Image (spheres, rainbow, N blue to C red):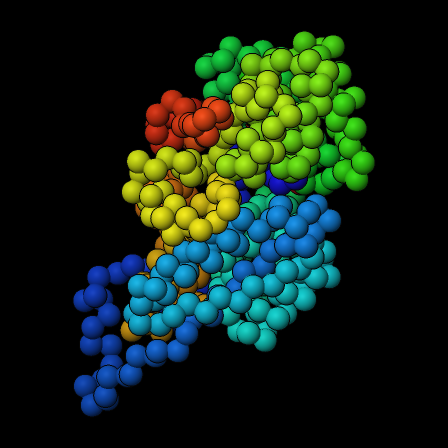
Length: 432
């Protein structure tokens, strides 16, 4: 469903700094001293709530729970923050909007939150059709830590996807309509698993198909023999796909489908007797519900791997993960998208804390986002960068987070720290 989490994730764009801003980046307190003329009284710090908005496709055609994990993670962060006193004594007032997975609904949510509620920022946006992205950009409302399901985060200024950006974001996707991503995931499995034949399973849906094209190019660039498989978005025939995988002797399977489709694909693979070295899925399917989702597919379940750009939500030895898990212990399941929603909310909070005298404005938050420094959300994210490159990079050093499902243990991090699992890989273009 969504654009691939490691390559399609960090291809997007920087943007020009705002000419007018209420405050700066995280500067020392001395930089904010003595700004007022001596004869004027010190202004009273506001105690009004800080309004933020979260747009999700909670009731989309794909299914009710598909896009809500990021919202749940962000809300958990803000609840925890409010319990600790908020930002300089100001509560975070969260306004959510379900766009129903449609462009019309998305535009309605943008109007409600940006124009009517006057939110300072949008956080952890996860929309099947982000039709209102241009309106958000024109209003100069920072959209922080959104999931790049489509090309919006590679197209417009003031929109900051969770995985960073390098392109101009001048109103056109990427560079002259082309997006770019790396081959680090395929390099990893070639090196670690000795894989040589890979299948790519996608829907006949724009975002899924675009990601599949990128995966296919990346696999071929790394020397794989590629078996492309596409199913109908509305009526997918995964059993036919599984039969073809078996016939072609595939040892590695990548997918660009949602959690429900992923489970159906796995079940079909077990039914026809497909045995692979690794069934590699994306961050959207990196959840604690694997055992239940794949209860009828034990062979496929035990071959599940996930890759991404954020720290494994099950890695509770890391203090930032422990904090996330402690604050979300009441949730029925845990997922990587929840953790990334939590990280998005933290990102907004750090931006808001940079504002002078607690005067949290859209311009102030946006300027923080443009400060030109990598951001890691206390180590939850592989450092996210924003640059404005006139030309796309031909090669880039990129890192990835890797985990494997193990019955009885859940998702187990592989190959040590994500910031050390890095490769110098080519950057390949694809059409969104």
